[in-house]
Image (tube, rainbow, N blue to C red):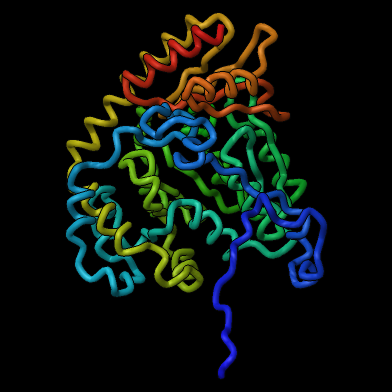
Length: 384
């Protein structure tokens, strides 16, 4: 009788991994041994179990998701998918053609990814040697520093001014002193929603490094996308996403505009089937209903302005003007942002809190529908 071979076993979540190094650590790259894992926002299922509430009873304002969801055509197209058993187009040609029409930029400049996060990592893998440096401008999206650590790069921090403008003179000095290869900028910036001016961006583009401008939230700003700039600047990359604009965060669809002298090498290094067939179908369907996308954008901007005015009436909060789909608030009056976040969570309202060197005692609130704002404001009053 042949021995039975076990082909599966229980998985070990990261939270249950051994706290002390095991023999297997000898196989891991040295710079990863002390890497702190990225801390993502908890999904509905986990929140539901933790809070003892159904997902419908949770007002999720902690991850800047689009609570209106995608156009109805998205679900229809997913339900009628052809050939889900066949690998997707490795070049995402249908999606890139649709993005070209949407942006006015030739698809030759466009590369799609499994969310913009994949493209951030791909850029680093293609450009950074272990020991190279990048410039980061905190407070900002923490994925840049995380991916730099994963790729063995050092992070040179040039903190933003108190009004969240980038410190261009500080960046110039950092480039002269450290000779970094990359800089990551975000406009609108996460977590405060501020914009980078053309003047500041052009000053950074004049420096000898590759500039990656993340425009994940550009649809909510008065400022147009700078995707077409890659035709004129061979050291500029623009990143975009379907997560915020089209409500497709769960399907992971991002894209970037790259100079032709760079994109050739990224095509060589990217995973061949990085955008799933479902993601491409959904993204193309969303782009077809531009009127829906525009209507949702207007609704979110209108609600952002209403939320800002309401937050100004909360004595212990100081909201910052935002050009995005979220609002950053400092917490005062001997109150703790962590306690405020936890207190709201007990009432079924989720927000993001910050307590680090760049943002001490802040919360960030995503903009939802009017009814979500109403629940939030009632919870803030109850917490007071």
